[in-house]
Length: 194
Image 1 (cartoon, rainbow, N blue to C red):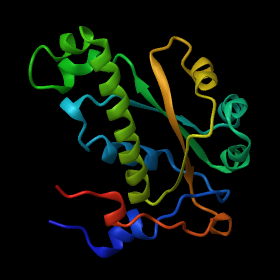
Image 2 (image 1 turned 180 degrees about the vertical axis):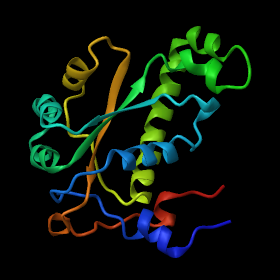
Image 3 (image 1 turned 90 degrees about the vertical axis):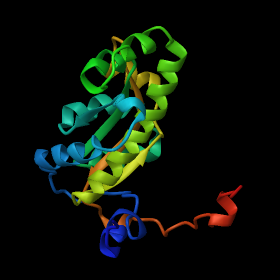
Image 4 (image 1 turned 90 degrees about the horizontal axis):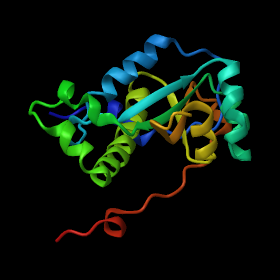
């Protein structure tokens, strides 16, 4: 089974990182649809450690603004939605709900290094799935890592359970603000076949 070339273009070939946004609201239902697609993608042992905080109000965006690097301030203010993609450090509390065998919760609880590595890796992976899911439902995305993570954690996650990973601006792109596409490495430059 494969998807057609128009779907590949939407998700990859013609998709661009949004650097500016039109003043057009994003319906909450699209955010739900994107999440419902992304949640179906694989994580190790179905851990699902990613949490999403959708900032849609001016008040919520104002709380984020002091943590943004200079180049990300204006486009984040313009974006109808900014998502804090975070990791639940105690994701394993849900393992009895999401994993088919007993003992997974206790395994992660008893091995903090493994729990942290699992949460970090799979949280980032799921954030990537969310980017593709958002594109699939018709949104433009602008992922960002230019922000002060400790400031975001202090402001939005003061109890420490969630940890910010990266941000995604969502909406409808202002294509006049796109950069020219930068080159990609070839298969030969990026891959080894052993």
